[in-house]
Length: 266
Figure (spheres, rainbow, N blue to C red):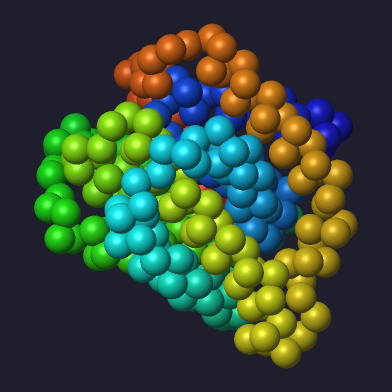
């Protein structure tokens, strides 16, 4: 049953990114958090996101604007590594509070609070007309890359800042897509290196991320396959990338999911 649930939700979520304006990782993270603990869900989402980015990279890499990639992408890569370390450190903090509802225990943890709050914050940014109108000067590219990379490392939410800084540079549509994809790809590679090697490096224990991924590898395979299918059919069904009504619905759902994480229910 869980395979069917994740197949349907990932197919729907990946396809919905073409309609909603939200990134694939933003929508998939709550889905994976149902089946994995939250830090592992971030890593599992990163794996699907990386696979999707590698597929796109083969299609759009020739359009990369290299000067922008270096100025934005290098700080993003370095700070994604730091963000990943922050996530692994937060995961080792003890449970802050536990409570029961109908004999079921719910734990409130630092990592749930941080990622839930980030989910709410970036959902708000994606839905905010004022944020989309902000123009950032080219001289702030390294700072934008650092912001995008750090939050990408912590929770995978890198798209809002990346788009805000890159979309106003006068790049062609092809250059924007190619450069944005390349930045997203290097952030995924950087944060995954921490998720894979960082847990045991910090704790000195067996890497629980790799153990969880190994145990749930079929869920991950299904996630990758149906993410590709969702992306393919979503692109076929619509030419516009944003439909306001659906975008608002997804935004509200992300607010709800973020609140459930903070409360320890999810």
